[in-house]
Amino acid sequence: DAKTTQPNSMESNEEEPVHLPCNHSTISGTDYIHWYRQLPSQGPEYVIHGLTSNVNNRMASLAIAEDRKSSTLILHRATLRDAAVYYCILRDGLGAQKLVFGQGTRLTINP
Amino acid sequence: EAEVAQSPRYKITEKSQAVAFWCDPISGHATLYWYRQILGQGPELLVQFQDESVVDDSQLPKDRFSAERLKGVDSTLKIQPAELGDSAMYLCASSRGLAPSYEQYFGPGTRLTVT
Image: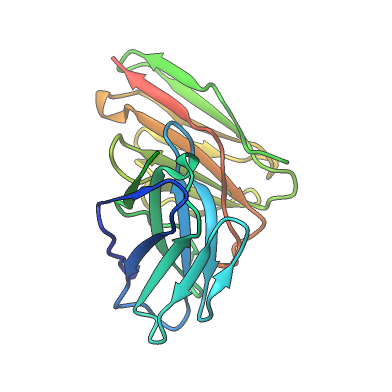
């Protein structure tokens, strides 16, 4: 499975945008980029995914670099409820499609 | 909104005892996953089912762990005998199918403490 690299922790202020980076330099052409987050004492929650183009949904936006070697999850206006561990995961389009979680980025939101 | 159900939410057991966890996926979801999450780490896949068939159990410690999904709906994960190192959160997830674009929906988990 291709690996991803994320900062261990980030901090931001409430109502400000947050940009969470992810490096995946060994990504293959069939790998989808998925983001999940895990709030304290809860199971992970799907956030967004993409293949080549930027994606938007009600929770966040995903910006994918042109060479696909990196991506950025964008929370447009952070709230206290967005404090969580964010995982960037590659899912092989040809393999068993399992999620391989790394350490993720622990996001702290200051009021 | 449909959710993945798990029970029990918490379980305390003594080492060498047997323990079982139950998962009811979202209705219509063909793929079911069991993950283990040790404190401070990301979840790790133990076993993956497509309907009633095992797709991937490469990380399942088969000498003590077993999983089944007999009718392709709900699933049970069993540990016998439990060891101290099995203390962790056990998460169940389901998805519509195997396609990599399908998101996984996670249950609240069962927190196991082995004493």
